[in-house]
Amino acid sequence: MSALIGHEALETALDWPDLIGQLRDWYRGKAVQAPDRQVLTIEQPDGSEASLLIMPAWVPGESIGVKVVTFFPDNAAKGRPTINAGYLLFDGETGHMQAALDGDTLTARRTAAASALAADLLARKDARDLLIVGTGQLSLAVAAAHCAVRAYTSVSIWGRSGDKAAAIATALGEQGLPARAVDDLETACRAADVISTVTASTRPIIQGDWLKPGSHLDLIGAFKDDMRESDDQAILQAEVFVDLRAGASLAGDLSQPLEAGQITPEHIRADLAELCQGAHPGRSDDSARTVFKSAGMALQDLAAATMASDHTILG
Image (cartoon, rainbow, N blue to C red; front, side, top):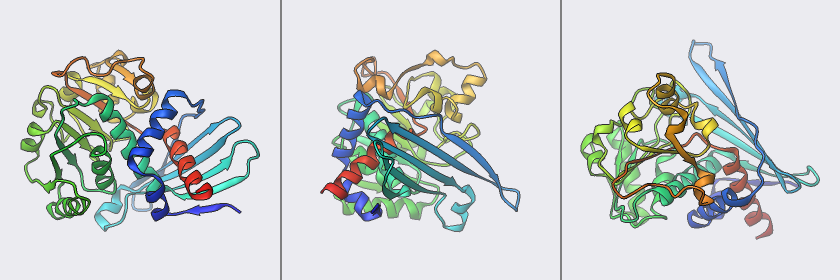
């Protein structure tokens, strides 16, 4: 009988240090095969658009998984989650279905863990000031995951809703993290050593002029070509890294300057696998500004789902 792994079980199984380590190990050596994700547009009766994403992956003879994600941006105004997902995990030798997992929690955990893994490889070792931009579903997880790889003395939360930012800061404080809500984004950016953006913005909200030498900018939220979290200057002045070139290059933060001729594909220095495998050393020095753009990878889902299934079923 297949297991049903829900929110609480996933949070227990996918502990931050262990999950970050699992992703690091999979990037170093697992022979994961993953076709390009499909992003389908769904026209709504009111003229708005939603998205359906399909992300399969497998390790031959070991495991097969597929995630289905919906993105309804108008849900934010209705107080509903903008992203919903489900994940199915199969035995790679027999094809038997092993588990159905809460895709929302799985996505949040693996996205935050991949972001923290990249920060561990790219951010300065003495980074102490973390800024989270955005107050959606991922904000809490991203802040907690980043705090597993650096000893932050300040975690600032900024969002368009001050009340939501304060609620996230309170929740992080209950976890023992030094969190506070801030209302001046520019000032917070200028002070931050690491900035992680988790928004659905279609216009740049992070200005390159605000980023100090040695800073690390982690761009998570904008996954479509008409979405954008950073301006051109933030990309042009930085050493840019990605989770996967094919996917990240289609997201607006990179696709728009690429299409405008502001940068070339060579502006991307390395992907996460190359960083984990030691094929690229990461930042060139402590004064360099680094950017990590992620668009999500099916490898991350499969690594997390396998870990959760092993923890839940095998104990």
